[in-house]
Length: 275
Image 1 (cartoon, rainbow, N blue to C red):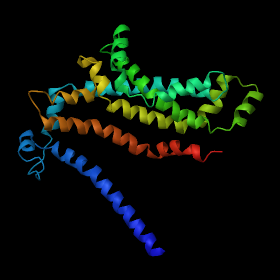
Image 2: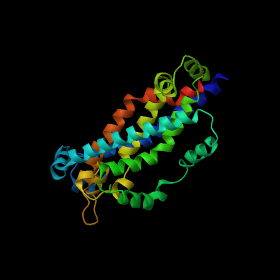
Image 3: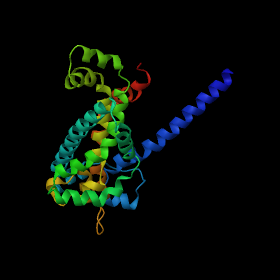
């Protein structure tokens, strides 16, 4: 029995190491390649580099207003998080109560998880143009908020559903109104679920490319993801610069996820242990 257990554990660790290697090797190659000249990448992309330099990173920031693009991405991520969390919290709080059309609303919000976002390219483009927010970070943020709302709603509502009804009833008996119950009882307890939704919203907004490219035409609203495409055009492909820009883009999401891993796991699993 002990031998079988050890064999199964060894197989599990071998499989985990294999998956880790498949995930880590491309990332390490990307980082190393970002320090190599573009000519070397074309001649011997997988060779061991003879020397590494920061020239690609310096050239990326000198040739393009990367700080502006970085700021646009940060601003969009912030706006999306505020708008989406506000809407998701309000909707979740409403849906923990009973009312006539609640099943239909829950079904509608749930369907948003299964409909591909690509299907809304034309409607989003037309709507953003009609309200005059094309090539504007607010227009992009509104689209991202609509895309991220179903997932955020499910995470936050799933957490609110685990809050004992007795707490809400006790607050109401003490004379608290609906707003006070939300602000003083529901929200403080729901912080782990809200933080989890915030992290997913920020990462999704930071990495999104399709709608950022569709709803943008100038530097004033260009995100850092769209900026990477400028290094890989039809007539010129500077992979060294593109790789350097990718590393700069990836690092913030890795740092955020690494710092908040415990809160993310806690927010996703708390519903299974709360009574």
